Length: 368
Image (cartoon, rainbow, N blue to C red; front, side, top):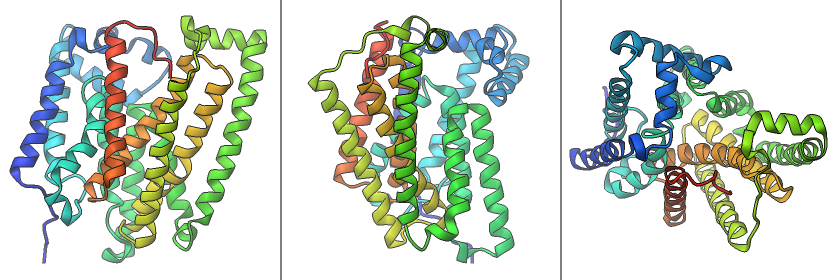
């Protein structure tokens, strides 16, 4: 008997869709700090992305859109992308992309709260990352069925399809390689990690130590040597030596993020132990929440403490924001957002709005 997965009612899904469409309609042109950059990528057949051989699948998509709409069809390209995001949002909120927990239908405000940090910037400004992550979510659907619910041959096929989807997401936006690494590590270590989470904690410790060593090594090399200075200048231009101002408020800001990362890890750990997540999805989220997020957070603090310019620290911050947004969304879909995580989702959303506002007002790169 074919049982349909749980889904929200039409009202909540429509409310979420209208909210996303309103953001996409508002954050354009002068209010969108990346609007001109993507216009250049479209009109110049890839611009710097092509020069650096980055994100080939996104460039292929741009090529198709140029064939369809012509070299002056950037507005039509953005409308097409926005239409895709709108359709994706509708199906996501109806439970047709990732399966819902049955209880999420009765807590749809929390679902929208978990959705907003994911879509607010990525469906409006950082569209490469948004496109790549929609493909990743489809790949997560392949991991959202318990092993016992499928024949072994079918299950292996689903794992392979998940890896393909995560790989395609990485080809759209290279930063998604973090999630590809997480799913590969989760699948490889799954047979051990299901018995105990101790392995992941050891990996976390190893990555944290590696992060410290890397931060110190780059600090010594990059801030004291001539070769390191040239490297910084090539990578970050005028922002390579921007002054970073440490203050009590800045440390409080990063402290709040640390509490949020700890809350996410604790929640994943609880769901992990209670068996409320399908096995392979559990491995992926375990690698993200118990290993990658804390390691990136520790590395960001070390970069900050070692006086690295804001552009460098913000790179680590963006990686952390992407992983947090995906994790909060999945937790919301599973009906697992609690009060602390709800507050943290608001913090992430407000922080995204702050960064967008500073960029729109042409303020120097945010001093994270």
